[in-house]
Length: 332
Image (tube, helix red, strand yellow):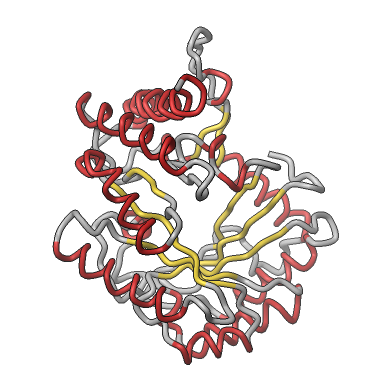
């Protein structure tokens, strides 16, 4: 994939592999050994990343950066040092992906002084089990306490498994009542992915349809963006592409022989891996034209499901969700 001048590029710098929670649906620990990654990014590699971003700004000005993990807030004061270094070099204020457990007024004040733009806080399904309910209540209380803070908080993804689809509307109603917005919702994909039953997909279709009818025009509808990116708010104007800068030197940035051109082409190659061209050959499908590029998770054979089977399940998900949007917005 060629990096174009006006392409929206987002870099996720993995600043730590440590985390203070153990969520069963976690993408990171599905792909990384928790003990082996119980560490933080090195200063040397972090500085190479921001040096590359600075050089890339000569080619593309539309760059955003997030700090992710693990749980970035476990870094403490070092998180703010990293944010200041990024801002000083590039003028970019990063946002922080977090589970929200460590958020506080003091942390928000430090964040403001460190040029952190916002916190995107993941949410748990409050109706799944006591563990999820407790985590959800803690995070929502943080939101209410800190909602007028100088550094804003935004709701991150609510990861749903197939059995949650029957409660989709109830989940949406709960968050809208608590927050006045709907958080993004996504299926459980990558390694923890499980094949949905016909009944679960029926629940998904009906739930999405009712949510769209109920909340369209009231709040953003960020529903299942790994499947229906054409409905995702970030993609209304231009494509936005995300790539990860890991704690390991995957792109050989630390090599003395690695030029900017070498790094640039490595990132382009990574975008080809993350966003793959796809042609299922089902030209009569109503959604054929919107499936030409798929996120990498649908080609992964991690977990119980083969990559070939995942593509088939993507198709079933796509039809259930996209037809729900169509019926809610166009037919009825």
